[in-house]
Length: 220
Image (tube, rainbow, N blue to C red; front, side):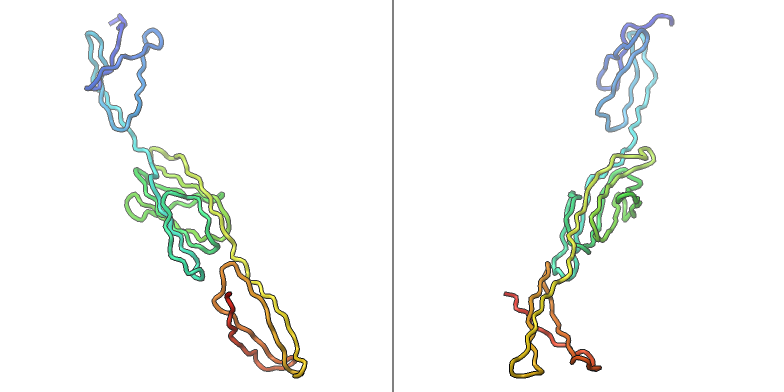
């Protein structure tokens, strides 16, 4: 008709909500906390509309992730698993596999500096990726689907502890009594220790092959 209703209600089958009149003839209602589809119709004193369907589109979510820290073999350290903590400090050469658990995601992007990598879908809702830590880097993770092509991202950093070269200091001394006898002593140092130390020698100006002697290390 030509008369405007004084009041309009939204009825979702459970409650009736009075619509706010923003200006004459225009009304609004704000849906809050919507997680599932909703059905409703509009009502006045003497009118009830057809049923409307409010469809909730799935939002891609990363809700958890596991990170394995596979340290270099020379450290003799067991694999460590980190859960939901993306900031890492690891020795150089550590292999880092990520396992990312999602919901309603078609894609997960691993962005390192300016490079983007679409992660492999291992099985439903689980994406995987692996990186070997050679130097410090920043990275982010984000999930998307056909309804939300650009989603919020989570940003983290990986700090790498360099594997410094061993240092060797040698002192050489000759025997007072034997002309062809030479003494050698020294100090060795390394940030992760040693497995072995070999001493190679040959006579000066000789064409013979280098000789190797395994040196015992005083670890005290």
